[in-house]
Image 1 (cartoon, rainbow, N blue to C red):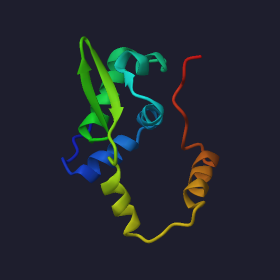
Image 2 (cartoon, rainbow, N blue to C red):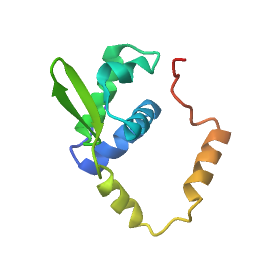
Image 3 (cartoon, rainbow, N blue to C red):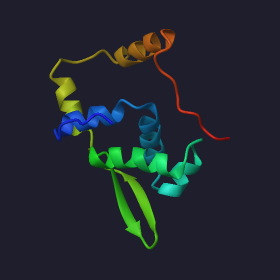
Image 4 (cartoon, rainbow, N blue to C red):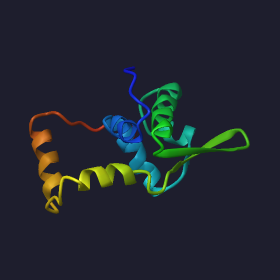
Length: 118
């Protein structure tokens, strides 16, 4: 793994660069989950999901609370505040700007969703 600085903004954007980690954040937006519950959603090992969660935790986007033998993963409220402020410094984007960027990336084949188990 590439060593990045401990700058909160760098850590947040680095964590968000991975589609699996973005998907995990979407899940945690809906509800708190144990590490095992998160792992059951993906076609990867518990160890691999734990690594993704460590990156999100180190970036301050997720917190893990130990309850008995389990770790409960929770989305950190206002965790993207620094990233949002940084992006706002470039001025306001039209409401559909990011939708257009995502559509262009998909058309180029540069985005893909992580495999989900069904």
